[in-house]
Length: 142
Image 1 (cartoon, rainbow, N blue to C red):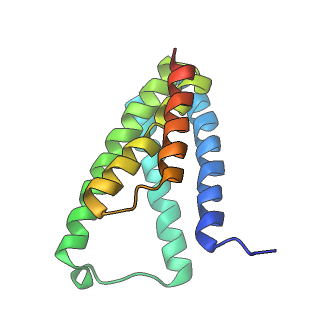
Image 2: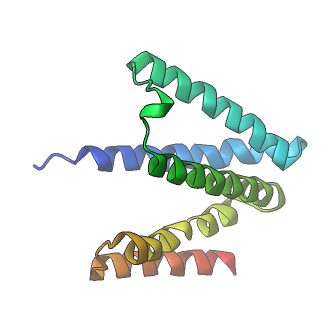
């Protein structure tokens, strides 16, 4: 039996924790402004990330990081922040069972963006999988 690549295990971990994020987020925004909830969540993420980096001894001097890397990480942070603000507001207004699948349309957006801007291959498996995700999200949405 073949061993799963490490990236698959981390991706499954990401999916599991994203599921918990939806559940805990829905419960957490029930009695608080969704923007404030996102701010609190962000502080927690900052603390947890700093603790992990410290435990693993992975700190680097900011000057050692290339300007292009800074640019894309800042842009990613802005996109993440906007995504979280929208996500928490959607959770506050709608049911988890509908918000989360619609949020997962991000997979289809990521596929298209990966093909257009990073030159990733558009195989029949990627097209089929992305289409099924889109179809499922649309079915749940309506």
